[in-house]
Amino acid sequence: MTQVAVVGAGLVGVKRAAALHASGRARVAVVADADAARSRDFAERFGCEVAAGWRAAVRHPGIQAVVVATPNDSHAAITLAAIRAGKHVLCEKPLARRPAEALRMVRAAEARGVCLKTGFNHRHFPAMLEAKALLDAGAIGEAMYARCRYGHGGRPGYEHEWRAQAAISGGGELLDQGVHVLDLFRWFLGDIREVTGTVLAAHWPIAPLEDNAFALCRTAAGRVGMLHTSWTQWRNLFSWELFAQRGYLIVEGLGGSYGPQRLVIGRRTADSPVPREEVKEYPDPESSWRRECEAFLDAVATGRPPLGDGRDGLEAVRLVHALYRSARRGRAERVPPLGAPVEVP
Ligand SMILES: NC(=O)c1ccc[n+]([C@@H]2O[C@H](COP(=O)([O-])OP(=O)(O)OC[C@H]3O[C@@H](n4cnc5c(N)ncnc54)[C@H](O)[C@@H]3O)[C@@H](O)[C@H]2O)c1
Image 1 (cartoon, helix red, strand yellow):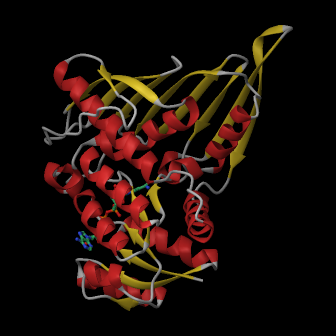
Image 2 (cartoon, helix red, strand yellow):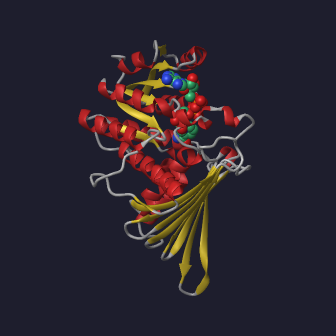
Image 3 (cartoon, helix red, strand yellow):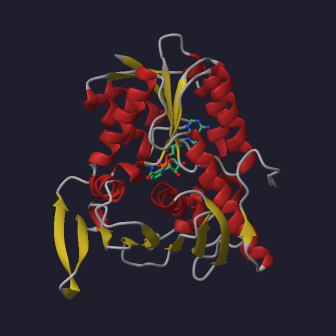
């Protein structure tokens, strides 16, 4: 039974704790939230100890792993302290506000020999896992390009929440929701070597942060990912389309306010210009949290890297910042492989 500390008992900290608890393989032993009342409520719900601050939580001798579910500005400090204490870490997306922070986290975990996983639960949605398995099995041929629209409409007062404070969040909608999609592009299409983007502060009074981002990403093999991510979508939307030589895969919905999740598998046929379509529905998309938790616990147990590891988190943050540079400079930006000379903002 892996003993875990959860730092940050907000929306996602509670989801992570519930998934750990439900796995039957982990126990949430310790919590630390900057808000004492939240820590208390969480401790009552999960029957755990309240630590005297996050530093005490990550050093707690009774735990082997830490979930970091605080706002983005504290991911690096908390994760680095946990790694130094020899703990495995599941840190929420974005792994950090900037590539330099994320690189330090990845290097520290590799040097200490502990698991660092990024909270990329979008890889663990049932429809997404099935789509990836179909692509890998050659069911629709070679991938050519992917197209994604992802967004919501904020809520009254959104501009006062931490996501709208640049010093805390480190970026707007591209770093918030877009980072998931950039990670999916890499997973389905391969490493991205060039990006072009533009960003807008179209509605919310949050400049220099963006409430909309438009991105074109090109892989080394010439595949393309196209993304529009938005805080002015007004009605929540997740639409992911992947086109390949012999067909396509479409994932719609994430459950809840994003609508039910379904996968459309389109296959071209020799005898008709109209592809044959098969539609699959997934009643429990929330299971992504449970699956991702299992992947983390497996990685802790086996020492093998989890799906969506620290390096994936770093690469996604590098892509976000390359897109910010592209938007500022009005030109395409190269994204050299790590190890090659890198511009680390
Ligand atoms: N994987 C996903 O799909 C997903 C979805 C939503 C949010 N997130 C990420 O999860 C993180 C948390 O987001 P949220 O929506 O749960 O936010 P939230 O505001 O609901 O919760 C954050 C909690 O952290 C606490 N906190 C802040 N600073 C702290 C500190 N230094 N030490 C201890 N506690 C501290 C706050 O009091 C709050 O309870 C963010 O990085 C966000 O990007 C990921």
